[in-house]
Image (cartoon, rainbow, N blue to C red; front, side, top):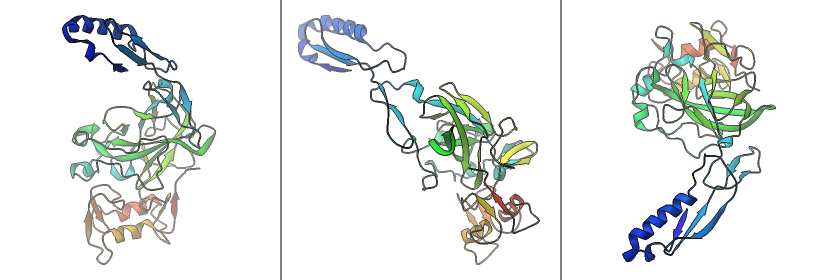
Length: 327
């Protein structure tokens, strides 16, 4: 709403003009629900002099491109171009069967970055904000809603599981809830209502994809990848521990494969992180090689990360490979 030539008409008549102005604004105010009604607007005279210019939204348009992004040109953003999702997932590396929760050691040690880590080419932004930042207060939350780590979510086309149509960086909490960056809300995607396949990625775990497309709208849909209620794509897409389904850990190289031996294996990536020369060395921080997500990369000894890679591939045959179940 743009207001012009009002102040210069005030002076001695300011009270009268102010009252007339309020009446005019009330008469032409945008008292509508947040949906796109269409393009509208005009310039009207105000009692006592001056003018009031106003606009009311603009039409929804579709952008050309592979992601078919929907936006509105005006300040009214139509609800039909946003869908919300409540989704649960668990990470094998951080899982604690005794607590029935994942641990949050990375958060407790202050290693979780406030900016999302998924910025390399393997994690493109599709219909996604240009940056993702979590306030420090969100990372200060403890208990079951404490942040375990960042995750990367995808919506895929209902007719083509390989076509990613929207992405979001989001936060994973100890109880498995994946929330938006305020630490509370359902995750919002900038797509129209419809059915989509949903994929969950983590920087050192194998991703998982729903077997069937899920109906999404502005009202948050519930998808639980932890209790078997949501079938997943492929065979043995997740680990099963303590009656819960978990994303397989150990994909340190983020290539969709967990390998203990051979070219490009994940075991060597642990050695490289601790500089390789002394296997008993450790490295502290936010590393992909920190498979158990305790803030310390270890190759040998108690709580080492190498053993988890071996467990993921089955444990008995070092040359075995665990592959992500993705199209």
